[in-house]
Image (cartoon, rainbow, N blue to C red; front, side):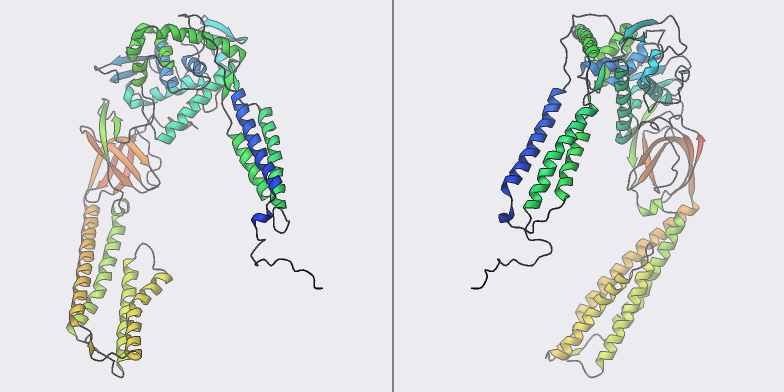
Length: 590
């Protein structure tokens, strides 16, 4: 009796898979293990959530922590959006800055740097905003008034700053003060002009600020990492269970019984990504006690309705209380009047002429004729005009002769004439395209495509004349005339446009202008680069496109002289008259 045959399966590249091959128990076990691991992650997140304490009794007493740290604690151990303006107001409350409201709107506020602005540079080890927080330096007075008020937090001494005695600045306070002093002209900067940098630069700046606030809170013993290294390591070890089960289930479910580590690696990498994304801060015992006291101050400030309506200039009366009210989100008008965020791409601030003023921005299109040198435009225009003129004799020949009037079938010997004419046309078109396509040499594929599209009608004509019986069929001269008119119109338009390009480029080379002013905007994008210069006395400034790598070292705030073409606006040169003081504004915001 013949042996039973194994069921036939189609030959495929790799093993064929069928639902019948699925190992249901192991697959369900792997799915359950993944679900249980995700539940473990959720449980860890719930167990490590910061626990807010009960608010202490209402009080007007200030603790030694700065407003940004107080906002961090009362905000659930997260740095909120009001921490930066609160720090700015606190610097004014400590006598380093001043606010002057020059209009009915609180947003019409000037920020004035007190004294000669040398306080920031006199800070120990200061060399611009600190990219790596050194919050522990707050525990030393750094050579400042030894009679400053002191307090002990977590067993460490900390100075309590006050008006006239600001004490040593913390890293994030240096960062905010540096932003003001770098932008100030004559010791003054409008509050609205504090909006600087692109969204990416501003996000990095605020991220660095947040790191410095967190570092200071940790140095005071008020905060700790929400997820410890041990917890993260435990989650990774637990992830090995669903990874192994997934790999075994995959191996047992293969048609040929062979497994691989692909699914094991996928599950483990996914777990590592989830664990790596876990971050944040949580409370300590000392942090909860301090937070309860700050919540008591917040309740006391919130009970006074006038704090909600106070402008930044009210810091002259309310001192540091206004800074804490801003940090707690109570002094909303003050926070709204101090926008330390990303810039408005349609507006900019300038000091050219000695007075701060706002200008509106418009951006010229970054066309090729504006960003390439006019000599290059002359070269391109001449070659394209020559390319168009090469086709003119052919059009004239077609219009003057009647070789296009033919009857089918073709007479003996006509094929040679037809294909000779087509070959000459192909050569002319290829040379013409080579001249026109200046930026890039025509590729082999382009030449083959051109030859195909021109030879195809000839091949079709030959096939019809030899394979089909078509008697007394005449190619109408009318259709040929229509084609001549369309082609001639197209060539005339292309030639006219390139003549405009030619004369415009020559005019740009001959007629140049010099513009002196302040660089108010440099916009770098992947597709274009623009520079806007305020010449003074205007309300609207045009931003000119330049080549992507041109003037890479130029900075906003610099006084420059621009040499520019009058016709296409090509920028030949930008010479810096006065360097910008804003160079390091975002240099270390990483």
